[in-house]
Image 1 (cartoon, rainbow, N blue to C red):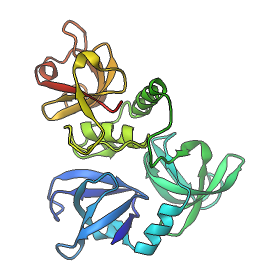
Image 2: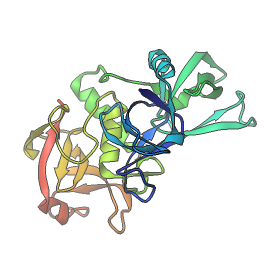
Image 3: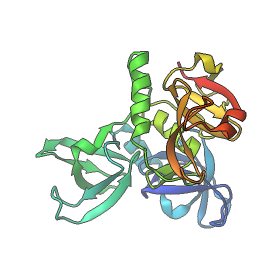
Length: 272
């Protein structure tokens, strides 16, 4: 059974219990598969990026036909801002129907007028938002030359600068390390494994750090970052003084050198 995520961010938990650890957040407009219903009020779901966990039933619309229709519609993703208000009318003074985080998905209707575009929501409602906040939704990798795609991955990651740390998070309200890297790649149509390791069946292969280029990934014990070049990487950390998305270096002697991560470095990884 297919289902639609109908809340801005659906918590995906390790067990069907709100006291369980948050392992992921599934964003608005995602088409998921229900793979089980272990107890009242909970579903076990599989996300489009093949990650599984337990979701509260109130966050989902289990409807095979609705999910199929939604998947066949033209869709756009929130990208240009951290948050996107969906308004009842094309004016700031109207009621806010829904506020979506970066990564939330809507379906545009027609062409923008005075900067406003009408959008369909996956629950059947319609509203309006600024067209500049939306970008093309990619289900397949962005078709760009390698260097341009590498640059685009880094530019996407930089949109999250200043976001605080949140275990299991994937929104501008809070991210964890693999939440950042998986979102950066997903927003460019590339599905990588959600956690901080290389897994067979996903398109990342290990390479020596000496071969890594900007846009590649760097893996540590229980941690992951996006490589920027020259030993520097963007990552999300709960370390005191950083507490979120920041840049550090693997180069001893650099002001932002992280000796603990240098010691736990495992490998670089590349999609290219």
